[in-house]
Image (cartoon, rainbow, N blue to C red):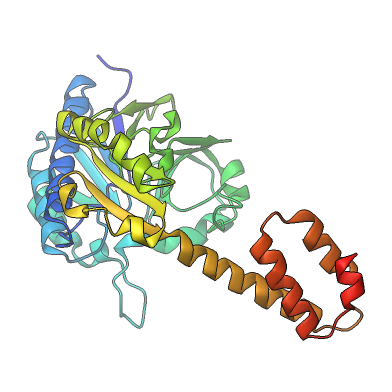
Length: 357
């Protein structure tokens, strides 16, 4: 018998069809189905009794395709599981004067149709379930808990602002299991489940801590471990190329991986506009989406931004001539230096003699 009786999942982010790329839409759908199979296998392998979904089951609420996938997920689960669900930040219903969370509005339907108990802020024995709408209460806990299950962002500085102060949780909870951050993370007594599938195209997706995962837990001993779900198939990868030529040198390898392992790529290419126009994106849309950046446009924007900063600085009082000297001595862009000189003299700062020294 397995020593883990509980499976914690978060941030599945079931998506609706975008209709921008039918190949990507189909990939997203099949990746979800493949992930479901992995979860079912883990439940069977470890003889799981409790399944806790810790927020952001849906990418957006009320979307037809995501609700269809949700139905498929719950109806495919083995019978007899104790299933509990809390809302995440993505399950907020937009446009309401008072903040409402989707699953709180269909509690009875979730229980009747799928046997899923939706909880917002509920104590069960010495365990607390806290949905995203109630996380502020975690800052003022007065009772000690063995486990707190929730959905919030913490320990993310400087990447993102923490949603709550977790100091109280560190003293009032032996273990806090959380959703929101999309990778495996452990800080003190706060453990993030990760997410069981890639939700976005990121360069970090290939890092060990960013492998899609779920969390196995023994609620009696608090022992836990991550279990990887998707590893080499149905993954989202990002590649950045400095030119169209560099991408074309790599494209065959990318396509082979995509076809063999059902992976999908986001390709970022930086090049001159004339070169980018020669790239026929439709030839690759069956395994990739593209972001094309015009180098000439990037330089133009960069130059204008620098020009504006120079103008602002040189228009101020008591500006030292050393500013121009610094730019000239530390910049290897001849065109930028000449442009800087022109702006400098236009604003009558310094003298021609000083600039040419």
